[in-house]
Image (cartoon, rainbow, N blue to C red; front, side):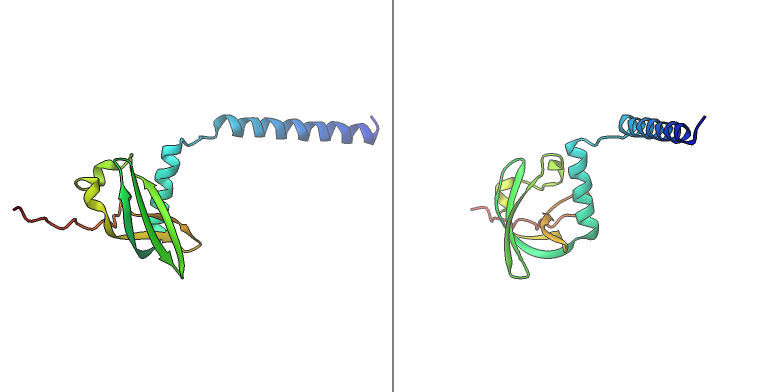
Length: 130
């Protein structure tokens, strides 16, 4: 067999091995659902984030809207809290006001106000009964 045929057979073997390896990687790679990706994002920001003061603008049953400023840049953000609703104290309308948040220094727009291991929510003031 000439050398050229050996090279062709070797290249074919490498291509087949690569295709099989790629197929196996795709078949067995675990794809995370959106809820799991969001949970991992929250935990990452909680672990590596810096603290800042913000203000809760509005709150619904599943979303909290807030604003904050980092290095002179104002951000308005929201956080979906539907998965961690049990961590939100009381009624959502009583959350409006000051809040502490965590943000990533490399991407200040990536922020959270509550996660499984940390919360920046402040206790709502008690309203005296009349």
